[in-house]
Amino acid sequence: MSHRLSLGQAFIFLLRRDLLLALRNRAEYAMPLLFFVLVITMFPLALGALPELLARIAPGIIWVAALLAAMLSLDSIFRSDFDDGSLEQILLSAHPVAILVLAKVSAHWLVTGLPLLIVAPLLAEMLGMTAAAQPTLLLTILIGTPILSLIGAIGVALTVGLRKGGIILSLLVLPLYVPVLIFASSAIDNAAMGFDVSAQIYMLLAFLLLSVSLSPWATAAALRMSAG
Amino acid sequence: MAEFFQMGGYAAFVWPSYALCALVLWLNWYLPRKQHEKELRLLRRRRKAEKR
Amino acid sequence: MFLWFHKLGSPPHFYRIAGKWIPWLSGIFLALLVAGLYGGLILAPTDYQQGESYRIIFVHVPAAWMSLFVYVVMAFCGVVIIVWRMKLAEVVLISSAPIGASFTFLALVTGSLWGKPMWGTYWVWDARLTSELILLFLYLGVIGLHNAIEDKRVAARAVAILALVGVVNIPIIHYSVEWWHSLHQGASLSKFDKPSMPPSMYVPILLMALAFQFYYALALFHKCRAELLRRERNSKWVEEL
Image 1 (cartoon, chains in turn green, cyan, purple):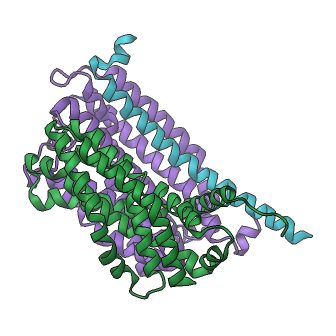
Image 2 (cartoon, one colour):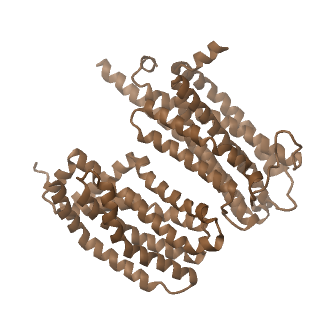
Image 3 (cartoon, one colour):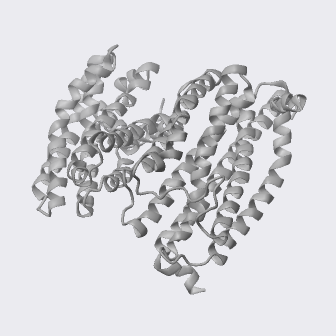
């Protein structure tokens, strides 16, 4: 083939391909989102819907549900490629696998993390969370969900070939998610009480930068081990 | 006339409700028709291919 | 009579008949819609307690009624699917699901928009609102399950069971305002008692409800025709179209 793609072109190609596949399998991607909504709905039903209680624990509930939903959606990053052999092709490519991985993870975030920006504020309102905390909620989701996709990708790469991959994946990934959970919910709590949230936001940004720069390489290494 | 649109000050609640209903009802009419036309096009193409 | 029903159950026959009925259903729907909207938005007087915001009732109540009705239709199809494995029932069930989900969504959102100015909140976790929300989840579950199963005839059996299991939610929604303390108001329009609102208000509601019924029929027929073509792609009657 005399026609060679540059790295940038390869990135865009893989990103578009994954987005197109997601568009065709809309229902499959809607399910983690529905799970997110369902889990949050469980809490008022279980706790007796006292408004003050719900408003206070709303940030925590929303973020825990976001973590669980993110975990459920992780399987889709590499599963179909592993099953049909495309994953091996990606690993054999002349381009650095880490960049290609970044393309796939970006597509995953666009499809699973971004919709939360629309749904989470609605649910926060239903839980009676203080309106003043809404902007911080959106900000933490915007910064936090890419981190979930990036770190999650490492876990998926490690377990993609395994039979009981799902459960092991959760055990691997949830502990890594904990810092995001702590700082995100702390930020929203503070915002609800009117305090300054810059410290938590800066920490989240730091995590994001760290994950973007390091996790693609870790994921690539894990993929080589699992599927190479 | 202006009174009608103001809806006694509740315009921001009443009109979006009606507009959303209109949108959703239109979508449930439009999308199946598009799907139907897609199917018909697919069938016509198949028929042409078989005739060759 | 039975012969007519039996004939209607055949996909090619239904496809043709539905195609013929759609224009009539659309015409009646539009007529009822205009009548209902005119009665509700222009003729009906201002409510002395709620001002003009009560006019949301003319879409909220019909949408809520339809959300329950469509689910009952789906449950009925479920029985037909399990007992007789009728193909048309499968198509009607899955075609009704998005329409029913839409009505449920509209009922929830218009109710929420009505609730904010009137009762001060967009949402409250009382029995009626929560059970209507669960209804939305049930509809989405039916759509999701059907989507997830490759073989659509197997998928139909699965959603038939799901629809039947979920139908228990319908009486819960309906009687929730009686069984539990609720922010949502009690039934003002019941089958047998005199309504607790003047005719100028309840007539447009009934007109809109009837309009929505005809809308359901025409939207359902459109969706069923599209679904039938997709499922029966390789059958003889489709090739002869």
